[in-house]
Image 1 (tube, rainbow, N blue to C red):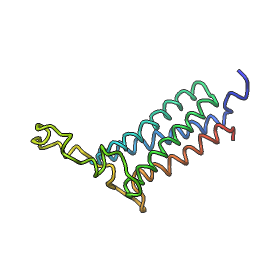
Image 2 (image 1 turned 135 degrees about the vertical axis):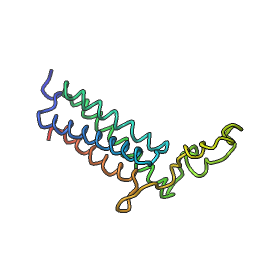
Image 3 (image 1 turned 120 degrees about the vertical axis):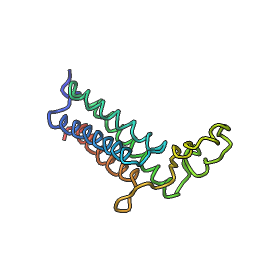
Image 4 (image 1 turned 90 degrees about the vertical axis):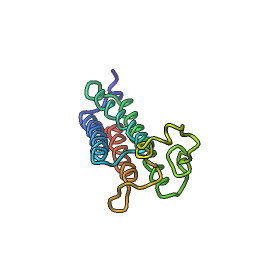
Length: 161
């Protein structure tokens, strides 16, 4: 293979560190879920790119590649973007998906059995409500900030720095 298609040793380490960062953010999401903070639909959307970044990191472990580092950066950028959008929905800066925001809480989509069930509304987590915040930032906002930093690491790995 051409030398410019492979990652240098330090670039590979940066990529693996970025993938591990996605693993830590994903583990944190599952920890919050275990502590009783049920995720909404958009929370799940933010998890998928982290899973992809972890898989890309595993591939880079065996096959260091600039293409894979670029895909890792794209995965981190994607979850950062979803997190920023979700944080904006929570702050009511823009509308979110009608399926998980206050506007989507209509009863027309529920069956009679759903309306009579006692556990239906406990499972529904609204995307436009802040369930936890630290230092003025909600979980999606923290995901956006930290994932943007991970994207920067992926880009540094891609550039060979």
